[in-house]
Image (spheres, helix red, strand yellow):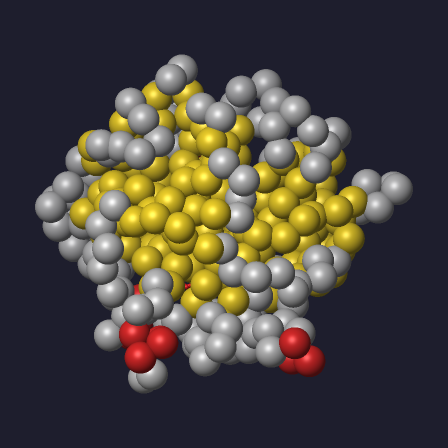
Length: 297
Ligand code: FUB
């Protein structure tokens, strides 16, 4: 590994939120084989371009007693001034809460979705809050699940779980709504494969039924961009402008364990369909770090 490579920071699985007038990114800390991170950090920004690393917000094994490895793919939501952090921990999904988007997060004490409770792997939680305030958790690998969250945001209602299988559904399911249309987006293929990419479907409600509408975002070999997947979608507050945050192999010389985050505009056609994303932007820039360290080995 070159000297230049050694000081680099790698992040993946970006979950982008806007809380208290600031953008927050909740990612997986990347840079180790088999995605071996055991803690979560949060990044924040005012402009989506320059990002502060606000440090560690949850440590598996220390803050989470029931799992100590594979800290992956989180998502966050706010309700009544409290912040809820959904995370993967060793193929279970947990939830922690805090008075601020930067924590300190306190784990609920048990998995919210335990390994094996539903078909497929219990990974990649994503929270969606509908216009009427109802919150849903979306998760899964090979099978996508959607369930209503309880009013206190700490449990799913098992009576409401709907499951969805699609020949290309791999992981990273994400829900968003624009007007009366709901959009389910997800990753297909393997995150270590250059062909990892995002696909979309739409439907009339948070449980579908879903109609596959095609590929939303994929590699651009001519520009050296590969494995564009695991995304989240955010409407910029007070506008009808949208962005998509996703990861790709870090440029240059990245791979499925050294990924970086990009934020690109997301556009809709005149009839409200999603328009394929043109990947090409620079990865996010970290301008300050509370805890400088080198994460890659
Ligand atoms: O970052 C670890 C895993 O890689 C995530 O859970 C998947 O979605 C894939 O991005």
